[in-house]
Every structure is written in C-alpha cells, then in structure tokens.
Image 1 (tube, rainbow, N blue to C red):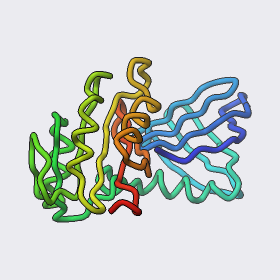
Image 2: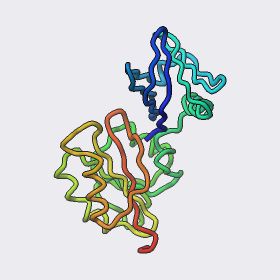
Image 3: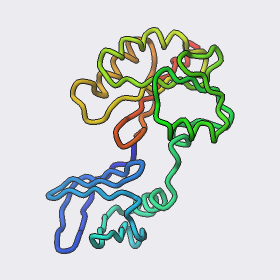
Length: 202
C-alpha cells in the first residue's frame, strides 16, 4: 500500500488532526473532515519546513508531516509504476491465472515479460491470481503447490468489501503454507498481497 502518518492538515480555514495515507495515485486524509486528492489533480507539490504543501483546484492543502514531508513530496512528483511496486523486472516470467485489465497486460508487455495465461508455467517467477469472490480463494491451495524456489504469488482482491477481506486472503495463503511479505495497492478498486514459500522450505 502506501505510507501512513498521523498529522495535522490545514485546508483554508479548516484544520484537523487525523490520519493521512499516501496511496499509489492519491493522498487520503481522515480527521474532522476528509480529503481525497488524486495525484492527477495536484497543480504543484512542495516540501517546506516539514510541511507538504499541495496546490489543488480547490485550494492549498497543507500536511504537517515533519521529516516525512520531503519523501512524500518526491513520491507524489515521481510515483513508481505499478509493475515497479510489484517488483517485476524486465523479461520476467509471469503467469496470469485469471482475467486482468488490458492496462496491466500492456504494462507487462512493455517490460518484455514472458506471459503465460490460464496456467502456472513451471518456471514462473511471478504468478498473479485475481480473487473477486470468497469462493475463488479455494483455488489458492492448489496454486501454492505450483510455486518453486523464490517464485511469488500475488493474490489480487477487491478493496472495501466485507465478503472478501484482507484477513480472508491472509488466512488462505498461510493455510497453504505460504508467507505473506508485501501488500500493494493494485488499482483504485483492488489490493494485491504477495506470498512466497518460507525460506526454510525452499
């Protein structure tokens, strides 16, 4: 996912303490009021004396982040691509076990990824499995058996749903003998959890 901080935010005459979250393509704030600022709407971003100052069409939003202000500003101005955050290197062998959007497929092709669709290749370095429903998670145990060495399984699931949650995904991955090592905001609607074979068992 992104970075999280408890901070004070000022927008116009409003000021509130709360929690700020730096996501893949937006910054969120929840306090006495809520903010959702997409990176695409930010007209300018500056780090000044521990403050992250974001100029938006609605006005100036100031996040008092201390030492984190410069780091957050850099991430807003130069965000990592999705495939970079997922750790996929050029030429990687990637298996897709369910349907993914055309944009993700395009990103993988731009990395010259070797794609296998519909099954896990024997030499796959990355396996992506989309679970949009609770019942889809029943397949994780079988998929886990196809992992070899340091290969990773990313389970992609919907955000903000009660019928399939992060705890559900963690539970099936761990039950299959895998270790969860990373979580990434896959898109505006989905989260991805990364699982690997524990080092002692490779």
